[in-house]
Image 1 (cartoon, rainbow, N blue to C red):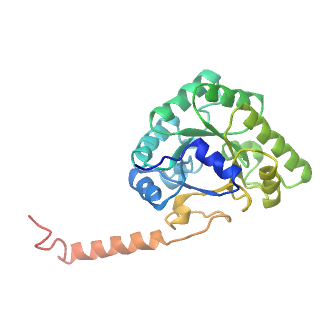
Image 2: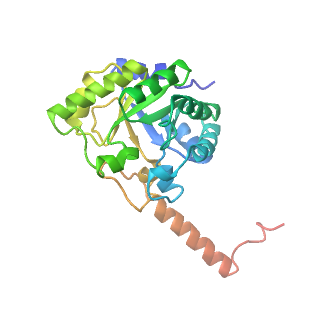
Length: 266
C-alpha cells in the first residue's frame, strides 16, 4: 500500500534539511501522472484561471470552480499531498464563510488549503481553520490576489527592513497555525533568511533555491501554456508542439481518408 504524504512528512523534510517537490494540476490524468512520477505535493492553483479557463487574472475564478477541479485532481492521487488554492474573496468577508468555503475543499478531497495575505484578520482565519481540522499553507511575498493594491507584479522583500517584515509575517502565520509558508517573487537571500529563521517548511515560487520546497505551474514545466512564462519557471518539455503535431496528423489523416483504418472500425 502506498504511503500517503502528510503534514508530518513535509515537516520531517524541514527538520532533516531535505527538499520536497510541488507542481500544480487541474485534472484527473495530470494529477495521476504527477503522483506516479513521485511529486510530493500537488497544488490545485488558482493559476488555473489563466492556464485552464483562459481568464486574464486569478480574480475571475470562484470557489465553485475550484471545487470541481479539486474533485478531479483528488481522484487521481494516491500518494501526494493535495492543496487547494482558496480563490479571491472566498475567505475575506467573514470567518464563517472562510471556514465553510475551505471546508468544502476538504470535502472535495484536498488535504489542505492555501490562503494569501497577512494581518490580524488572516491570522484569525488561519487559527479558526486549523482549529476546525483544516491544514493551512500561508502565501506571502507577492500575492496575486492583491495585485491591484501591490501595484503590479513587483518583487517583495528586497530590503533588509522588508525581509524582517516578511519574517515577522511568516512567524505570525505559523503561530496562528499555518504548517508551511509559500514565498512568491522574493529575493533568494530574503527567502534563505526566512527559511533559516522559521521552524516550518518554506515553499519557493520564484524565491530561490534555499527554501524547503519548490513549486511551479505544471503547464509551464511541460511547455503547454505559451501566453506567458515567468522568469523563474523552467521548461522541461514542449507539450505545445506535441499537441500541435498530433492534431495536425489527425486532421491530415481524416481529410485524406487514412483514419479510421479497417482495424479501427467495427
